[in-house]
Length: 285
Image 1 (cartoon, rainbow, N blue to C red):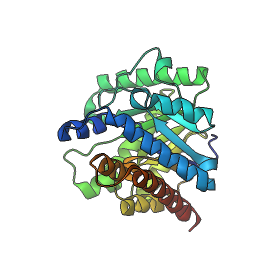
Image 2: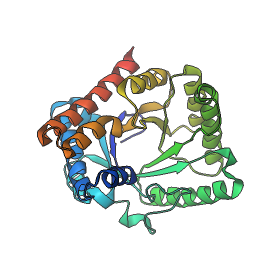
Image 3: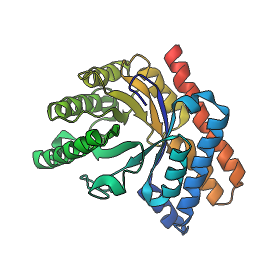
């Protein structure tokens, strides 16, 4: 992967979300391994029949539930990112340190939640951790994907989507660069507002190397496609890292017995291919 190339990442490193779903329904957590297997098989099916996946496809998988699939995918030349954060734990904590046990893929992923009102101590403590991880990535020649989620609290939703979150993200990006944290990829929430997208784009472009990928938040295809349309003019946008939009419904419905395993695999592949087509259509309009 280079920063000039697209990246179409099927993100399936979700852990606490799938655990919660299983626990709420009395489903054995051992089925999470089965779910990850279906996601990977769906990716492989799309890869076998879609040139764009072979050229630019990637997986985001966790060691906790998907370790055998990480090794097999890498052996077949598939780009795999692995997360280093403890799932669902904020402020940021590591799954393991030294990082080697968790970061067995080709690329490193970490997620943080940020708001400027979280307080200086928390923000600086996370920056210190991210600097350490960034140094490890450079030393081990692993591309670094930094996911930043900004939650709305009391702000009006429309204002937050068009001005509040983009301003917070832009400030976070600039402050990260100043602190020596320069990821290869910024994974952030999309927007339907072109001016908001431009504000984030300008901040990312403060350094020449980093690029932007859209995260999915489990949103429906119609909304994701609107995010893609707004991102079409971003100079830094290079693709997406989306998961639940693609796999959640087919996989959970299969586990619940609503349809067969082959159907779930086929739907994951079709959903993933639909996202790729939507991204490429948005970039060429």
